[in-house]
Length: 231
Image 1 (spheres, rainbow, N blue to C red):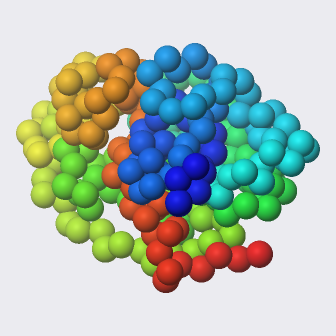
Image 2: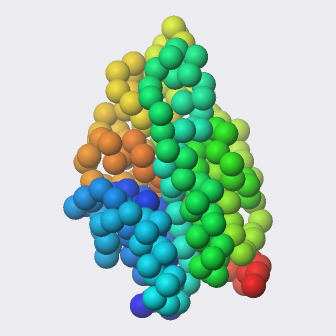
């Protein structure tokens, strides 16, 4: 274990969040229901909430310092409640935010819940954007902080549009669209470069990932003597 402690990374996908915590000095263990052969750290394949419950019941949760969770978010993300809903596209999606929070509250540890912009029922204790870190994506993400708090970074003005074709208009800009396909969406190589994720070339994993810079910032803030941790 590193001096910083150990993070449990739930609904881990390919490890964008995990890499940021690693760079902040934490050891990381991931859990996801899908096979993630490119995940760069220790990994458990299985249902994330069942795994968390098992860790709580066995007392093994005590080996962790912080829990990060990115539960399925398609049900209330901006794309689902905006364009897809207006066009009648897409199907039904799970919303696991509430049961995830309930178990995180029960585990007794500080935690982070991550969700995209939209109507997900989380507190927006932090909102991070690629422009804050000089990245080639905007990828706004909201974070609810449980049992700890920290200050919010300034959100700089965007330098232009996201490149691509949307709502009948094609625009150029300094950011790539790291989601979907067609309409000028980013290539795999462009997504890797824009987010700083080099260990996977799976499009599905890249479109769901958050840039490691976000959790590097969060992990560093958690370790800062200026942050507050609550019992």
